[in-house]
Amino acid sequence: MANNTLTITDNRTGKSYEIPIEHDTIHATDLRKIKVHDGDFGMMTYDPAFMNTASCKSTITYIDGDKGILRYRGYPIEDLAESCTYLEVAHLLFREELPTQIQLDEWTKQVQHHSLIHQNIVNIIDSFRYDAHPMTILISTISALASFFPEANNIFDAEVRKRQIRRLIGKVPTIAAFAYRHRTGMPYVYPEDDLSFVGNIASMMFKWGSRKFFSHPVLERALNILFVLHADHEQNCSTSTMRVIGSSHVDPYSAIAGAAAALFGPLHGGANEAVIHMLDQIHDIKNVPDFIKRVKAGEGRLMGFGHRVYKNYDPRAKVIKKLAYEVFEVTGRNPKLEIALELERIALEDEYFVSRKLYPNVDFYSGLIYQAMGFPVDMFPVLFAIPRTSGWLAHWQEMLVDPDQKIARPRQIYLGHDKRTFIPMENRK
Ligand code: SDX
Image 1: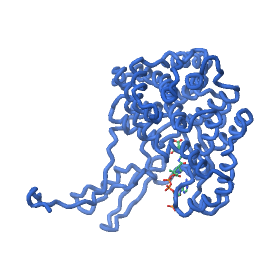
Image 2: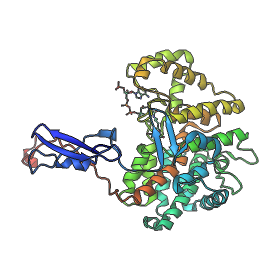
Image 3: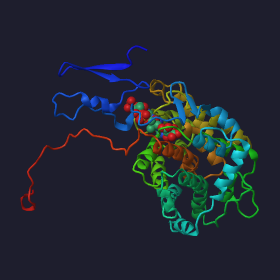
Image 4: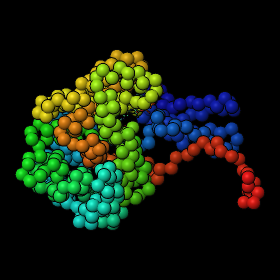
């Protein structure tokens, strides 16, 4: 290829600069040589919310937003959702390869071995008010895990990292389920080795006496598919948060607590909960046109629609929409589905949404399935955080061993006061 560089002419000085291009990007620090005066700091880029900034190089997940493509380690998400268990996919994210049956059995045993939580952690969960949001309980309790495993600070010891990864994949579902049981006042149910990863979550949340917790194998398969779809999504807000916090070399428990906090936001992982509240607010299909009108007038957002990267249908939403029909065959149709389908029908043909390339994202239909399966609405972001734990940890590990990575510390454009004379208290007005 001809000269793989960018020539930039600074019209303030008439000077030209050759900036090398790598992977269709330039190193932002190469711009620092562009100056008017020798003493200048040099050129920076201004990119609030990182709309067009690559923060790292990664080999974990690939997204093509225009084509609606999502692949984990090169495998299309549709194939993984159809054929893999969540722990198989978690293995793929960490080890770059799909596990053999022997490797999967060993990995499953390791995760299950770490699914119990210390009684002191149970006491922390017990200390929350009965009506505490389960995400708040999850975030705080994951952070507290750091105090139980001080070895986790040895982040450059690969074996220590692996042990923390197994502990977090194993313990986050237990903490999540206990947060739910705490709120309902029901006794805790502990994980059982003969249950699947998702089967244990349902058991720890819903088991009551001999009552079955998954009335139908379709529901267990559906939860597994939802977990596969939510496992990773490259540099989303919470994963970027994981990388930024991890770049200070803090332990992974503290970093994941921060990532989960970012996920809790209604624009991110809290959107699945917000979609249900939106559907409840609309209440009846006849109110959809008026709701759409208000969204177009800027009075709120169509939650579950739009995406920073996907300017096409989120491939996960396609899988989830199809899955919803399979689940409703077993649970009965969620009445909110009609409202959701009407919202989608209108939005996909309305200029406001079409011109902004707003399509259903992963959160638009997932909540309808969770609700039909009996999960309470405020558990939805928790059901997002559980599978995303493997994505967060895979990126944390990749960041730690990346020679390009240093502590994250962005710059700013300062527009505040110039130097001012101090005003003693007696002279202040
Ligand atoms: C997830 O990043 C990831 O990968 C996240 C995720 C993952 O797996 O980790 O995919 C999971 O978080 C999915 C997104 C869930 N959030 C929602 O469903 C909340 C509703 N959606 C949005 O608020 C919004 O679409 C975002 C936050 C998802 C993306 O926002 P952007 O890229 O910053 O886009 P924007 O806010 O600049 O909007 C561009 C335009 C604006 O209109 P104008 O100012 O140009 O007139 O589109 C409009 C916005 O008002 N717009 C919407 C809209 N989303 C964007 N208008 C109505 N309803 C919406 N949902």
